[in-house]
Each structure stands twice: as C-alpha cells, then as structure tokens.
Image 1 (cartoon, rainbow, N blue to C red):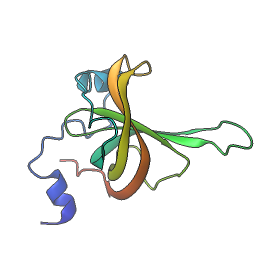
Image 2: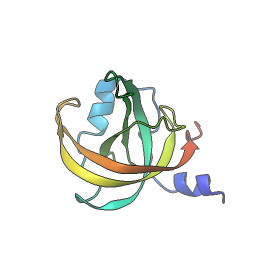
Image 3: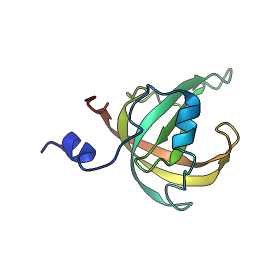
Length: 130
C-alpha cells in the first residue's frame, strides 16, 4: 500500500469534498475541539478549505491565511508569508506549534486551533472521488 493510500484508508473522511456550501461546512465542524494542547509541537494531517493572500502594505509583503480541518472535524488556522504548494481541497501534512485555541468570530464561534512555527511537510493532493 502506498503512503497516500495508508493516510486515506480505513479512516472516515466525510468532509473531503468542497461541494458543500459554507453553512454546511460550519455544521460539520461545529463540534471542533483543540487539535493539541497549547505549546505542543506536532504533525497534523489536514484538508485545506481556505487559502487567502492578505496584503498589509509596504514594507510588509503580506502573508497567507491557511484554514483547514482534520479527520475529526477540528478546525485550525495559521498565517505564513510562504506560499506553500497546496490548493483548496488538498490534504497536506505540516508540523506546527499550537499557540491558542479559541472560538473564532469568523466561523460562527467554532473552536479553532491557531498554529505558528509551521513547517510544510508534504502535499497529498485530493482524495479520489468515488
């Protein structure tokens, strides 16, 4: 079995498609919990739902917002100046440190885990549609 097949095999991954409206997405992550304790640095396999360039003005070049969820429906976010080779709908692996876990005002007060010191490890692409 290939590495990608191992990551997708035997795991419930109901949230893998981008073919649902935002309200349905919020409903699926409504029970989001912290992805790790604050200060913990660990690997996370997630699905990207938002990638947005945020321009802040000179001399700051701006940064990217990455929003994602894991297999359990836990919502996470990080900001990075680096444009990682990952697109909305892709599953990817990263290593990051949890900075904070709080209810996000941008996502109907759903618990969101914030990461920093993010290291992009690998893009696994999108799960095969059946």
